[in-house]
Image (cartoon, rainbow, N blue to C red; front, side, top):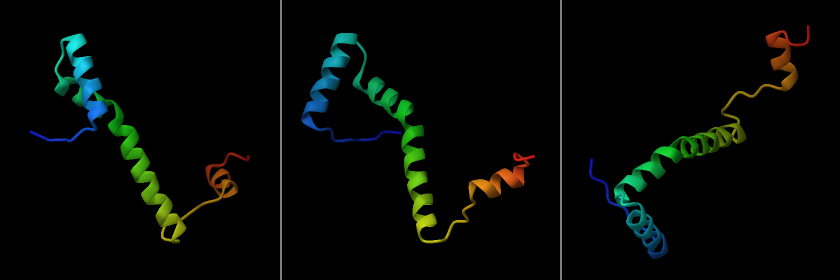
Length: 75
């Protein structure tokens, strides 16, 4: 699926330089960067969403004591 992005000129220069020195395409490195970081980005935004629901009282929260008791870790 074709996707278009606009990069900061310095980032574009660095990417051009990397591609040139390694004889790989810019698309290769862009794909590599996305695939290596998408898990972290998803985790960040999903955690922020849950934190906001907790702040609003829309998400159930348990104390450490409740979790330990429910899992039988204090026995």
